[in-house]
Amino acid sequence: MKRETVYRIFSHLPELETERLLLRRMRVDDADDMFAYAHRMDVTKYLTWAPHPDRAYTVEYLQYLASRYRVGDFYDWGVTLAESGRLIGTCGFTSFDFAHNSAQVGYVLHPDYWGQGIIPEALHAVVHFGFRELNLHRIEAHYIIGNDRSRRVMEKVGMTYEGTRRGAMRIKGIYRDIGVCAVLRNEFQ
Image (cartoon, rainbow, N blue to C red; front, top):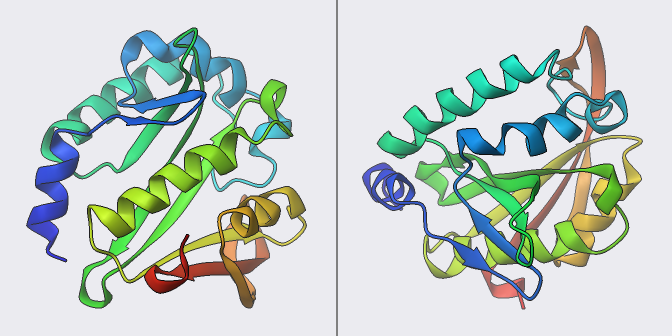
């Protein structure tokens, strides 16, 4: 996989459709929907980023993403409900390892939708895209130990727990243990 190919594909981010969802480019007019979950401590407890302090911060963030989408170096989709178009989270690639034809994925979801199978549905579409369109060999996901919900999402899309990296990341001033799950192309259904 070549960096130029990824940039070309993601500069014209394709929409991904599932039974209940449309994964699409995030827009500035998603600010209210994003802020509704991004400002919450319960949402960001197991994430590397802090809650958005106000709606203006969310608007600035979405404006910044627009510039990154244009050049193709942002690989995250907005997760929207197909019926209403409401943005309820994000799911996508957080990084690529071009030399080894692999990538890492991540996701976040508004708590009103936790436990409904939405993120596994979205993540399945993203992983499928990674293997089919990007010809990846391996896709992995990381989670902060204690975030059992996130690990279950990974396992629902066929990822296998590979181990814990002790004290691997300093998040919000604390060294945290990080669990790693992954799936190879030949294992994905």
